[in-house]
Length: 359
Image (cartoon, rainbow, N blue to C red; front, top):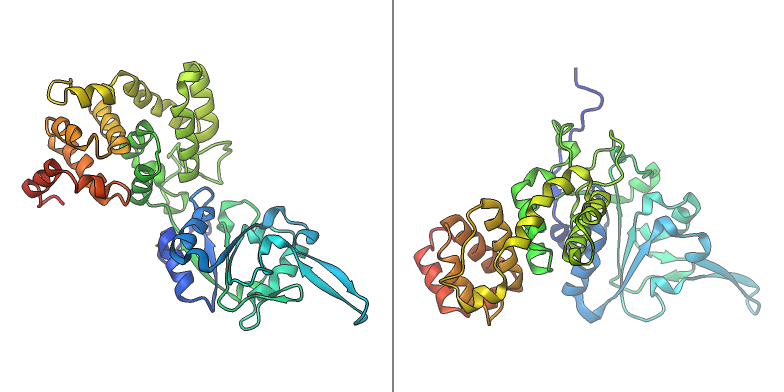
């Protein structure tokens, strides 16, 4: 007999980008994105904007914080002898363009607010109050797993109008995003060394994982894609406060276990050669002996590489062990923001030619 608490997921978890592409490909359906807290669902609007551009308006709606008057209000039409419901300007229905509406945390909204938003889920004429959505508009909602224990609740007649898809955490995708978006090198190096920080409590056998969100434990902080970015903000500002403050702030952001384990990587960073040293003397600047220090250094270089430094960095990296060469070169080759820098360098091209079996 199966354990009643065992979570069996017969569906595949999607990345944020896959979910965006699916939502765009099937706009007739209302997609219901479900995932653990902190995995980046709320960041999806930036991808919609990248794909659709100025042809659309974009309305991010934080449903859990809405009251009825934040959705639409009755306005008397004395001439017609009726009242009409006018939608709030946050939905951007009065500007003529089609709109992408993200109903974030819809299952946590008060039931009256859910009811008022419900006409947005109709198969044909989607409306809010008495206003119909412009042709081509897209609506989707986000929420958490019921097992996450954060108060998500939908009735059957609502679920019957939705296509539920599951959003997962993917360490490779987050690392690439982190390289493109300025996440601190020490944080990236720690994640690379502790990949189980991206595990899910729903995977099973994770009760001893001290880093992840787990609704069966009392937690004030845990590791997630979102909290790692906040941890990076703290690490970058560590010169403004002492080490006790640093650990306290990190503990309150990613949990004490992760904060203590990340501390060593932060200490490595403060002992590493500076960018200016590598730029001035790439063949003579010392290379760290400790693997953790090498990891932090390489991820720092991934963050800071540009057309001015690429050739100097390549001369330095080629003196390191093959695994660090590969980490540096593969990361910048795959980065949407670093690719042009990488392939503008003859030294990088020579490395690729000599190591094409790795790429």
